[in-house]
Image (cartoon, rainbow, N blue to C red):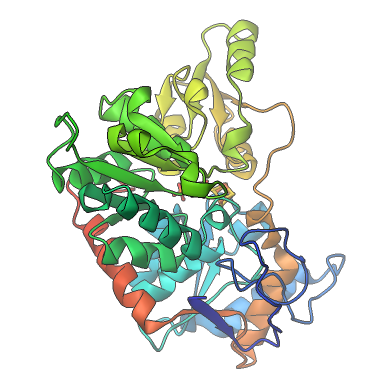
Length: 412
Ligand code: 13P
Ligand code: SF4
């Protein structure tokens, strides 16, 4: 457990025997996951007709003492109160750039609030309006599993030529693991630069043969595979998937020795839904349509797309698109709906037939925001996310390596 919450009455549940097993939502805290599972506050009723007025009143009372950040996947009702909107990387940077704000109210998910806590001053409180707003992908890699996996690599004699790279969507403990083991953090905007840097630490991406270097990529197998194959020119055969639920990751020593990319068996439950069939169907239905997807999508989806990029790149691409052009977008639905509404001169579709919100992002709603803002205005710090000092120190090593990477950052 690397981050704690204060100002709440959360009771700890026993650690599940199996990390990542089904959580008892709505009660206590899950000690094996990076997040809490309850919001213990006295929430206003969702039907309260004064919610907007209450949020406005509390926000005005707090003034510059509070800074409200909204991730692009948040609901409209929450985005309406955000001082800035952005992706996980830019929001962490924005939080760091506001040292005068006593309270940083993070409307996003838990790993993002952890990163904001590590990048803000110790006197600043980072508040997540609902502690159960986690990320199912981040939950697919528990630090104990990652440490076990590293031992498997050590036993196979490959750990010393393996560099761990973790996606921002991971717990602070896993970011600290990469910092400790000579690795880095990355986002979907700089995954290529991060992988190139990582391979350079172990002989370069071009090196071949039995002693060539490797990357252990956590926790999103799709971002790792898509970047390695499409940006770095590795082959699908260079990639193996490490399954933390199987002995030895389900891999033989020979497979580990031969692999260049050891991909953690994790994925995003939202982006993982988009299918190659949906892309093909749209192309047939709307001739000339452009397909724009996030790199967390499966390889067969990404290879069928016209443009692949991070949340920020998706937004920029639609903003710069020709009026009258048609786009189908494979990313979270709140964002796609807002893009469609903001660009009525363009024809913007959503790639999945079914509703596909990120359910954990959606846990931050107006009642939780009102509760958090009113509590802060009354001097009660609720749902504070705090990363312990030792974890933060090593996680910052990984984050600083990422910030020092050459090339584009999330807003370029
Ligand atoms: P960003 O890094 O683009 O904010 O994405 C975070 C995320 O959760 C994507 O699913
Ligand atoms: Fe996590 Fe996927 Fe939701 Fe992003 S969209 S926060 S990766 S579950």
